[in-house]
Length: 252
Ligand code: MG
Image (cartoon, rainbow, N blue to C red; front, side, top):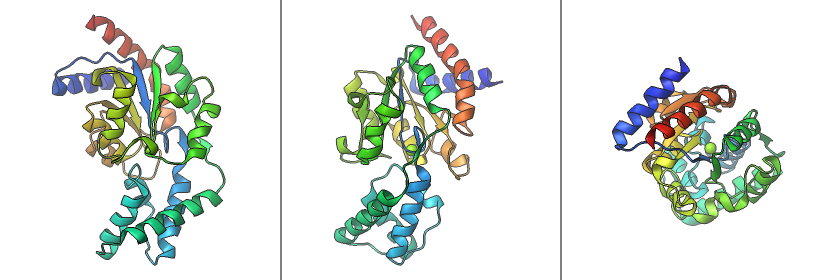
């Protein structure tokens, strides 16, 4: 069953893009994929906006995930107040959100992801991180929590980009830095804006729905394969990897 789903997702992707997948690397998003950090982001956003008199539903934190903090501040005031806020106010809200984030306990590593990243490494695929996050504490923890599996020189963060997701920029930078072509990397994302970004960069994208969103928002954003969570992807990965390996042998 899963094999048929994988096969047909790859076939559709290749037909649309008119190239053949020959996967050499996996590009991981960080928040909501490598770390279970979205509950902290959500709490911080909801409470930061509350300090500025705006109530937002928790889903908004997930819908805007991957976007810059300044863009989220502007978008929420526009959407719920029909107000265009001044850059100074957006900056204040961003700082407030960061203050709240810093007061929260550290995020946990996403269950099953260290095992998945290790399997991916053992199978000979390279690993990159492509995150919209500017949180140095979490970025620095990646090397420790995913010891020997992820390296700081193979990460694209908010510090490297000017536009950010959902623009393809972060993934295009990762392709440039790694020297990979679009048919040589696949993406693992959890957020609609992240999926949009990866798809706009022309990449095969696996979504894991680790938050409260309805799964259709991830397929609507263009995800090629969708899993209910990190465990489902971890369990399906051997089949995906086997198929990709056989597939790229056939390409030669
Ligand atoms: Mg994410």
